[in-house]
Image (cartoon, rainbow, N blue to C red):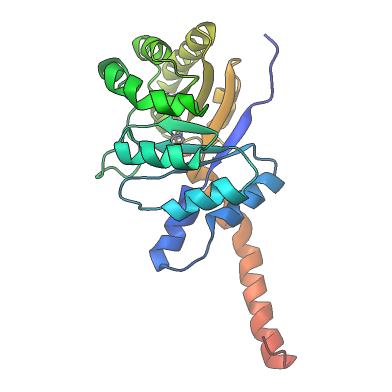
Length: 252
Ligand code: PXP
């Protein structure tokens, strides 16, 4: 199989988490999206949660209007989110299960037991040519169900694999095999295969070797790394501003 380059979708939710913590206008997720593009990222992923804990409605509107990378809107299967997707028309939606009390998306979507609801939910979305991705566990019956309801993409949940890998629990090898098998199974059905959740610069390599993988969606680790890759410069800039104002009599 010819290996294509894997697209990197950068999840910028936690730029909004920092902004919302202070109720300021910065850091702006749209500015983050521009940097993602300059740095070679291939897409922007944002999860508009029902409780609006990070990304807000205005972010989704701005990202669709002013960011030039494809927008992948993660959302729960609710009437409210369906309406927003139909108003905004992102390039893709990724349906995820959502619980208010969770810190982050915990499991995959149960497609098997929600076929009728998902079919009617997706009908108007597909009419608008929005690509449909379903965030699922690497389980064949979920993949079959995703295929049955006409999903374009499955995003395999890598959270469990990443947890084991970070803990150095050798069971990750078996879980990786399950992901590999699921990717091949889905690809053979004609589904595009993505993966994400919990991936870091340490764990991403093994998942990137899966031949059928087309896109990885990564957020927490990238935003975390960016703190330490950027903190030095941010401190230096603030020191410089203070010293310039004091000693060079520059009025800002
Ligand atoms: N993919 C999906 C469907 C998600 O829900 C998330 C988390 O919002 C991610 C990818 C990114 O996960 P992480 O922030 O752990 O990289």
